[in-house]
Image 1 (cartoon, rainbow, N blue to C red):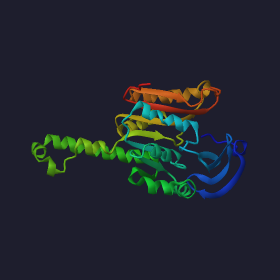
Image 2: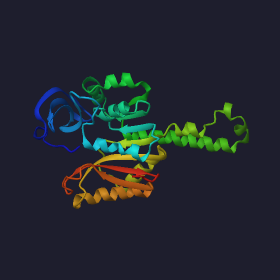
Image 3: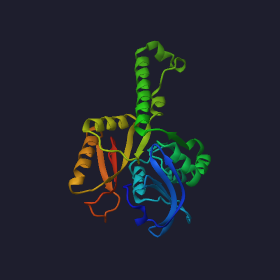
Image 4: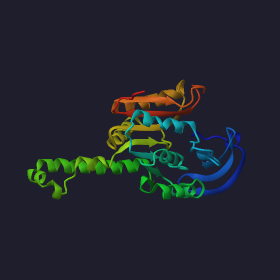
Length: 282
């Protein structure tokens, strides 16, 4: 989310914990009122990164409207089993995802170990890990570096498959030959990749490589969803539109979902961008 003066939007803010992280800057956990709800917030270098209701009545609610828009992935593909989230923060979305769909799997990558430790201490991540077991995997690292490493593993599997297919003897004895099967290769890939980490502008060539990398790490009919804070109209919208056009060169189908139709279209706002090779059935 955009950086702003936090005291302008969190009423009666009370700081619970602060620390410094060399990767992200100042980390603060605080509580206060936001939209008339008493919530706990994770602030990173003065920017609101995550939140949760201090007390809830009934089902778990997501703290921000744009996170609700991520749920379009289930309208677009009802067979989702394995999801990657880039940008853990307070792990609000994994908590929601696994409460709604306890039989599915989500990997969440967060660049800062300090942020993960704070999430464990103040946002219920430890309890979530214990409850979810193998359905939740926390990865410490850079999202792009993780995808590059994953793509190399996928391509290695593909090369072994091609080599095995050319070897008649290996085909006849594949159960004991160590040949990589298509299901084994596909088990490395994700049905959905959600990007909820800030990504600065890249050149068109670098952005196209990023889009191709994401596509490599997705299963057939997989979906990419990214939170973007952008204006819908005006000069500030021109570069994001060009960036989305680059993704449209790599994926067959793309669309942008504004998260609040009532906001000024010339002001930066949360939107979720979707890309897939499978048509979107609305």
